[in-house]
Amino acid sequence: MYKYFLALGSNLGNKIDNIDVAIKKLKDANCEILKIAPFYKTKPLVPFKRKDCFYDFFYNTAIEIETKNSPFELLKIAQQIEIDIGRPKNHGHWTSRVIDIDILYCAKNNKSIIVDSNELTIPHKELFNRAFVLDPLSQISPNLVIQDKNILTESKKNAEHQAAKMMIVNVNNNSFSEDGILDKNKIDKKIEYLTKNRVAFIDIGAESTNPRSNPISWQEEIDRLKQVDIFTIIDKYKTNGVKFSIDTYHPETADFAINNGFDIINDVNGFKDKRMWQIIKKYPNVEAVIMHSLQPNGKKTNVISKDEDVLEILNNWVKDMEKQVLDEKIDKNRIIIDYGIGFGKTAEQDLFIVKNFNKIDNCNFRVLIGHSRKSFLNLICKLNENNRDKVTKQISEILIKNGVDILRLHSFL
Ligand code: ADP
Ligand code: MG
Image (spheres, rainbow, N blue to C red):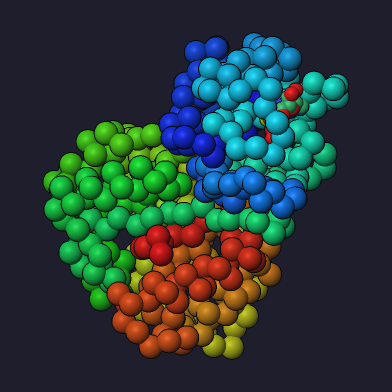
């Protein structure tokens, strides 16, 4: 059996559909689809100024597959799929395309296969030059090493690097940014919209960790999720490249949610409850966001003192987390770390972390930052929660330049 990573892209016609069809056709050609990365909207690569051509934006993703097909057999299959979807046979370089399927990397028995011929080069020659390949690949196999280079590290270095978006859906009526919804139909519409746009992650939480709200029990939390039919909705909209995460610190809720279709556990308690480790071990395909916070339930009563070095505290926390992950024998690719902006830090510390998070050794974990609409933004401009999307976006741009992998956001803006 061979294992491959492939890149797929489209910038003509119904781009998202074309990628979906290509994945389906690969499946039909005896390729088992192991992982599908988020879809990224990317700028076309234009090598020289061609005034006669209009290049529309691309959707790009990456997939991991397993198959009996050898590299040359797979190239033939991919080229036939390109033709079937409508790509002309003699397709010039640097032209728009309904679909492009490139073989990035191949391994057999965990050993990298090298192909170097006129027709086919593996690993793909341009792999390290293209953010539209590195970014999606870094979400499904961050610690893949090709030609001594780590994919996650390389993705951050690229000038065109983008962060995947995790969009927030609050199933409550006391969320701090007042965007909580308890109406089934509204939730359905919001999730339909987000999946249609193929956002990378949809983060659903029933309990507000807003400093002004009270904790609820896991029973209440599950009841609230059931009341709005969240599990039916997720089932209805599950689609390529989109992952659903459950925002909870209750192991009972996490277990129930995963059992009913969620893909990721997002825990503001940072896996302090040992039962969380058992759950992630029970479901080998599940990923987890582990957040730094000083106290249970994301409460803000206790903050890092002003004279402590917050970067050093976070550095030590990541190192500890890496040790725990390795001790528990969990694949590091499944873990995302979150420095917990607004949780147990002063506003000044929050802003400092946002500006300096790239100085923390991420130990090759993907890094998520959740700065959206949070109160530290008052240090930059004094506006209430609902008017902070513009400043959120300004900070997002800095974070992306500094190599953040995932941004947790209230608004697309
Ligand atoms: P690009 O994908 O770089 O935009 P094209 O898809 O137009 O370029 O070029 C396709 C050609 O690239 C094919 O003729 C194919 O034989 C060759 N090729 C070389 N290496 C690979 C690879 N790893 N994956 C896919 N095609 C490859
Ligand atoms: Mg190609």
